[in-house]
Image (cartoon, rainbow, N blue to C red):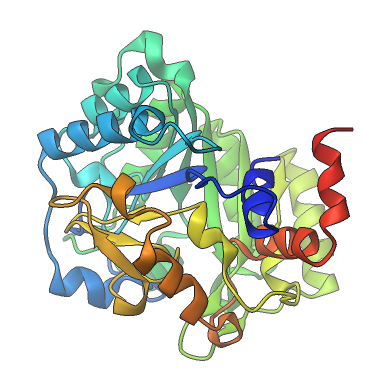
Length: 343
């Protein structure tokens, strides 16, 4: 399991630093939409930058050579996810940058609104397409009016139709594409769900990945009731579309420290190294700047440990690493569980 190395360190069974398992890289803070729920809108507005291509190529070289830089370490970076920040496909050289990550041996993923996905299709050589693990396209609604009420395109016309066209383009080229959406009052009636599942079927995407919306002002999750679960299941069967509905954020926290801070950094377009997946622009999560510092020298350093020890997760909103954090806490509370490593 990818978190076992960290559990070994946090239970005192090794003193070696643990390399991150996953790295998010923001190529730009520029976005062509203004989704009402965006948790990085303020950060983007204050740091409206796009990174230079050579900076990202050099960064990927650093990440690929981390073991040589820190030979006395455990764990490894398996996945590079290109995300935002802003909309990653706004970066004109996203294709070559992703291809370079593949050449360095990383599993590559992309989260995008799909508006300029053609740049990925055109920019990644055909022999590298299968090395892109998946592309997740945030849609939220297949009703153009509802889509715009949620995603608020900063263009004269809706981006919805362009996005659907680009999804089909990527699927036809051989990319594994998943459609993503946040469940909220606007898109959880039968009409909306039927349109969404029908669109997934039409584009040929692999599946629909949906989860409840988090109100960042109140830290409240949208309630996925049993009746809504049944409706989703019924609509999915009707359209013969696979779907995933992870509800791990709803599970209670058994931990007070965020262990994932050692597994999952975000490298922002302005250079910020953020150790919280929801914390872009928040100084309390800022480890340094990857453009003028070497992240490998900062990892497990004094400041990293200070951030880890100072953050009280009970004040945080429901978040993606909740499940992993709970599993790591189980190991900390009962280190005998780590015997799975040798059995």
